[in-house]
Image (cartoon, rainbow, N blue to C red; front, side, top):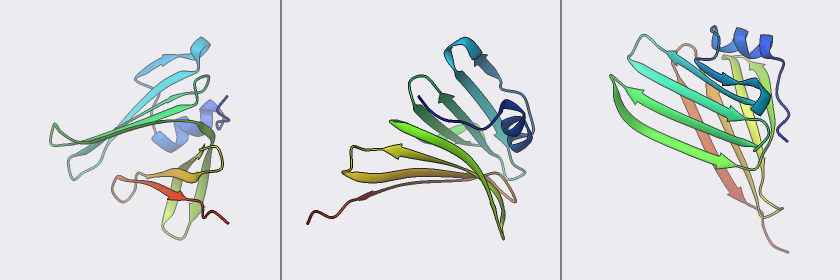
Length: 118
């Protein structure tokens, strides 16, 4: 099961309520837009351990990524602002994560690095 921040913390990060939710199933969808015409639709399923991001620019889909095996969703802050990070368990074969920033513009960074074999 995916460990997530409290609902009020996600509300604060996304600055809105989920546009879809089924709390009994641990399913939530948030949607935000920035001044440059980029829209992010971020969905998570706590019970299934899955995360999905969908980026649209001026109404046109530009990127969609889904991944299962999410273990921990956390909020962070650094010199450039707040961000949401999710780590994934890939059975010791790889380290995967996604970072989502909303300000000053929406940015989603997915990465997977394979673990070196001895």
